[in-house]
Image (cartoon, rainbow, N blue to C red; front, side, top):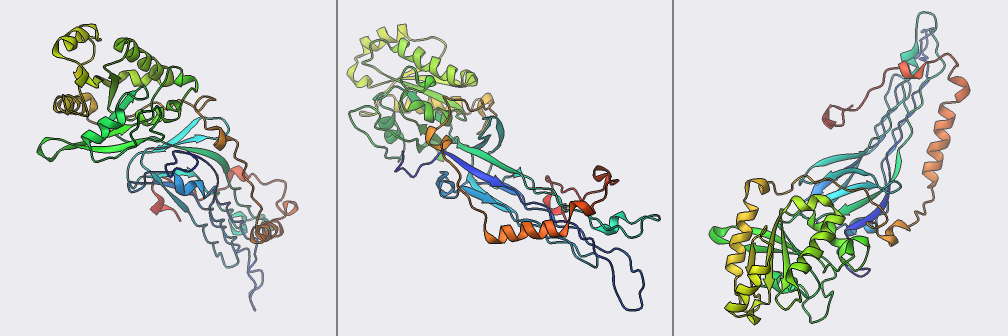
Length: 406
């Protein structure tokens, strides 16, 4: 996976902008004695915003952009001049991206639709200038509010592909061959296990110019939910599929047993996968005659529909597409992206090389200069001891309606 352009798991460090400090300036003009306080408010810090982009299919750009920092708000100045707000940072991600806390593994948010904006980290609010604190008994307040600090967080972005049908099966079950027969996708096909090293998507044409998307993931082996093989890393991609197509070859020793093993691995990975529609396809059926098919059909599970297919000869492919289309258009599968419960990231669901990634960041000279300027602008000794900062009024940004923000 190191040389692949398909990146579905990346760890990045995000930091929103800190709010600008309020000014403790006093109006000074000729013939205007005791002009009074007129220090302006500081600007708010920039937000970190995730935006869904339907034209992206991988998290590769973020692999080379490990640090995402928003702009800091500028300090206020005299004449009640407000500081400039920090620049927001908009990060384009593929639809289906889920965000987890890198430290705790807890689910944070997800981006499911094209153009959807999700505020990941809120910028710090700007401090109030000293003119807000002028009262009848304190007409020359020599203090102002500092801006709120920035929020820094390490997050993990995990991509879960959006597809209608997900292929599930053991290595060499014929998943890639089936995908190439039903769509224009050309996955790697060979006579050895684990030829599919990354998920593949294909658009399957259907009657009346209709179509649906099929996803192929690397083969699953027994114990995949505990970290064995390659399937565990890619099982996340079938969590959003409306229908799961189980593929078991006709030459398997026990078709029902292999199906139950695959089903058990999915249940251990995410129990919610048991609620999805399931279809069983017996691949490589060109080796069977009608009598053997009837004998095998009697031993198959009765709770799911089954189809005998052969991607090489085209046997049963039309019937398979009809069965898949009925399942996709079922009332319970009308949503293209059904809501799922995202399990927290634990030791089995993490990618070790990303978890061990160490952020090495040295502050720039401009950032050090801004820090020194803020300390000089607002001295803790000048704040006063009887100020209740919690009671002061802030201009709180409306994250749901960014256009309303100052």
